[in-house]
Image (tube, rainbow, N blue to C red):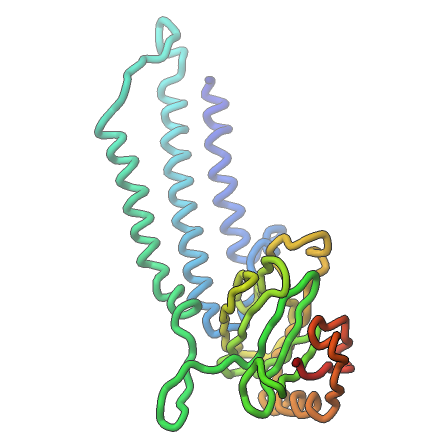
Length: 284
């Protein structure tokens, strides 16, 4: 291989690094490649982990590219009189090093991400009830189905899956500045609840009850997406998430209770498409 091709080969990791830095700093035309601004208090932790892994990947890419580029340049076939590469079966020291380094990196990442994983997936927010610290109950039961999202708000008893739940389809309204716990279930196949602005993604598996939580630091109106291929209508499976002030959220829930209309028994078991204006009703 000629030295020209070795230089072209080395340009690949350099170009990848430049595009990464441009995206990281919001430089056109790669600014849109970054995640949208975070609306979650946990966003800083997740973004730090995300960017840290990317920086590590860039360093590995540059190091690997530099090593391969040097070998291609230094051992040009024209330097070997007979034009043949030298053959050797193995190099124990080299094999040990290139096995040990990735192992160290993986162990480092395992410990590096523990706090972020614990905060967002393991340690559920808690509340004080009669002086006893207990897990915060779900504010909303989210049920995924082909191809939409159902939201069942806890009624006056503060619990989901009870007779006074309030049913809405296609719109999730939550308060700003409070821990919001969602109970996620699926009516049919595997779905995935994803809100990029909250750095929140959770697969929803049939037969399983899962929980996700967040605390938004500002009001917003964003999309809820499904990021698991769930059938022919996967592309259109989305809903809206509105993060509002606590007083506005209370007014919204009071409005749901005031305008509640009981659905038919058959509709309660498998709700049909209901507009946000109708605001649905309770489940059996």
